[in-house]
Length: 410
Ligand code: APR
Image 1 (cartoon, protein in one colour):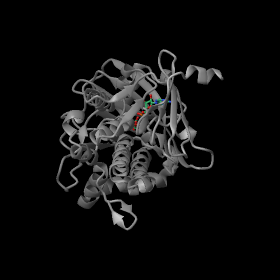
Image 2 (image 1 turned 180 degrees about the vertical axis):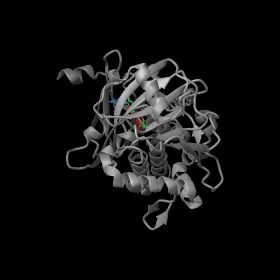
Image 3 (image 1 turned 90 degrees about the horizontal axis):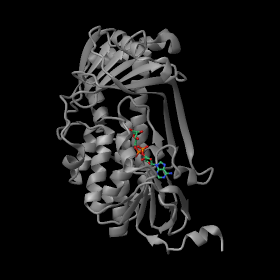
Image 4 (image 1 turned 90 degrees about the vertical axis):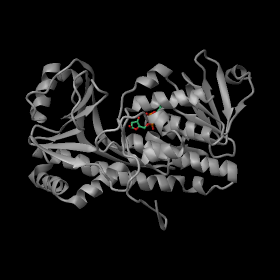
């Protein structure tokens, strides 16, 4: 007998879906499956405290608000963080307010930082008796192409466990084990590196009146609320820059210059990081009984706030597809999952790409040249002057533009 089988004394458990990862994607899948009466087990490698603290995006688009509403979860998991629906674009110090009113009625987007959504989804799931196992180490996936895959992992106290299931939801982000478990050659990766870095700064400093995007010859900057007394700022920088090169005084000087606000109030900086703007799509988002959900399948550059919203979109499609398969023996949703998700993924990639290029190239022509700068300025002028351009922008922000699926639009 090998050491591994000797350690695996208990017989395998059995469930319908094993969800790998308790980020927005995994927790949404788990909550929606529970609401559909379908068993699942969530395995998360970190502690509950660590997962609850990871700070990320803050806007839940109108489409996702409707989605949570349709499951009776919106008020429980999103809170009441509405805003007045105006975004500010400040170009060389001149302010332009753009409305996110998409004109189709229904709920608007909500301000809800990702960690708040994660905390609330966790609380609701556990309160309703959900099975969520933190500190699950060495998760591995087996027999994904068969009828009953197996998921193995090690508990916090070192015991090996094994779970048989009908489906695996790979919700473990870009560096997880789910996508890595797919044999070589099955998935195609479509990648784009913008060649741009962002310094992100979190500070206990007054939030702006509206989410603020600033274009300046010194580089792009942005300022967003993180609750009533805190702000998150972004500053364009070289992608290989180091946070140590940005002491507090340099951060505040650069923000005052790029936001064209000499009176900008500083505050204690609580976090600062640098990351590279990149975009990535894996196609297909499925292998056998493994379905990739959220960042495990795609990364979107942050402008437009689509990363978390796409994860919520995938989670909803996956949960409904599993429900139809288990309850009604209808596998249509499972078969079309990847294709339907990818249509929206490419739609949102295009929007984020457009916004990213526009806001960076309109200010700084050192990377992309003066011709691209002229085009980017023309796109912004159109957004500030054409009612139809604003409406199209708002519809994309809301996630409500129709996306073709086969011969239908959804
Ligand atoms: N085993 C178990 N859990 C894992 C493993 C693993 N091997 N690897 C990663 N995880 C967990 C992470 O600890 C994390 O809690 O999976 C979770 C993945 O969460 P996210 O990275 O947040 O990804 P996702 O849920 O798809 O969220 C969408 O949208 O706003 C963007 O990138 C932002 O995280 C956000 C994402």
